[in-house]
Image (cartoon, rainbow, N blue to C red; front, side, top):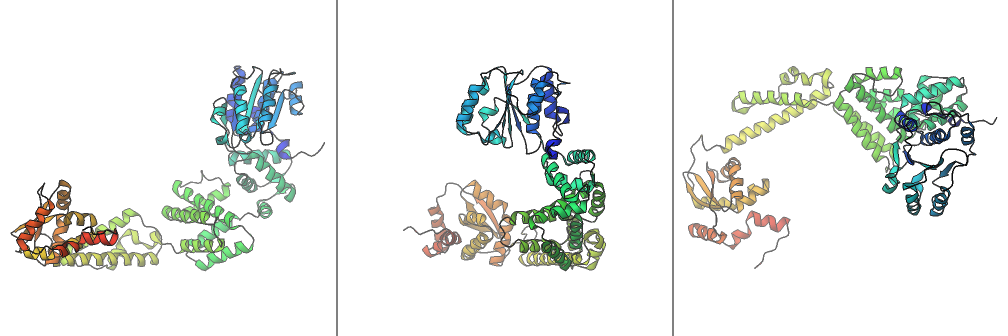
Length: 570
């Protein structure tokens, strides 16, 4: 007998032998048991997950002369004919090579004929999404109302390309990807039947490379058998497929945590000299960091799809890392994976990314940082005149700055600098407040004339506009009315302008006090329905200084001219 590859030799022959698709096989068996067979089925899913195999089993079950628990017995004359591919009642069509309208018209004509021996005439169309639009249209009417003796079974890996008019006329079954554990179990049973000795770690590597396809896993297994013989070890498999050893990833991330940049570059150099593909290396490193993150987050290794020995190692190593740091590692690596698609020099991008990860400071919890700032604030409040320095006792007594928790001396230096910077900002703020005397409720206000206000008004509006442009626009549209006891009242023409200035009184008071050099206050008042020209006339009459030049030099006008390209209209 000619040699038969493993994928064909161990193809499932009954519904019960189909791996990982119990939600499909159970439904089909129940339909057969209750005689509720649909006239059209659509099987969708990734490659190698059992779509065509299940279609053939269903075709045999529909025509089997003596089914066993709704499974074909595979020994009757009809089952043997179908298995040998000589049955006239089960027609398999490749949708990729028979995709035209003429082929579908021929199919439409042939469905009228009764089956020769079986109960049903079954049409299996593989890769049905490859049919042309015209072919789908030719199939519609027949698919909606086929003869009672016809059953259509469609299989596709790209269900989104099948028209909705076809989908609505079929019972759809979505086949899922085969889990790694199920693939390993299947390969182990095959190795026992074939008398092959294989390590569990080797089976795990094969299952991961199959990426959810059982057929791919069986093909890889057969290739490895040709390379290694009847004894397959994980090390030989890594050599055969040139896969990066897991130890390299453990070693790399360990030296990264130790911030040993030279050793990191040496490991990468050895990896490249060994001929490993950079993209595959990065994909493996992403998976490695992900496994550490899952082990660290769940404090267990049950969710890891790795051999038990490696899972225990992940569980132990994950305790050395902070969750936030692992997430940041993962972010850098995923960005690198995207960048490598277009990188002219992939090695440079890889080295730059890992060096960035090496020099990345350890994370600090937000709560700890807020606690530290609260402590600093208390010291500022208790020290006279707001003077405070970043003393060593702040760093020594707070738990967030311990060497064990946050990476040692390098973090302490960084944190010390950040505290000193924050302290300097606080001291500057206190000095500014002391100089400007912000509040006018606690200290007496000083007298000022309307002329002094108008001489500094444009400077005042311009200063506010530079810092807060929206507030500056509202202030520029307001007009000083009068002054009483150091309070400058400014009139607003609408509620929005009034409310905007009212909310920012404290800021406006600070700014005008700094400009005029006196303790004065701003008080917005609402005066609606006052034309702008009337306001200008009133102001001109009081001080006689508002001229055309003042309007042109107004800060709002300057912003419109400079930033928005406005032009003066005469």
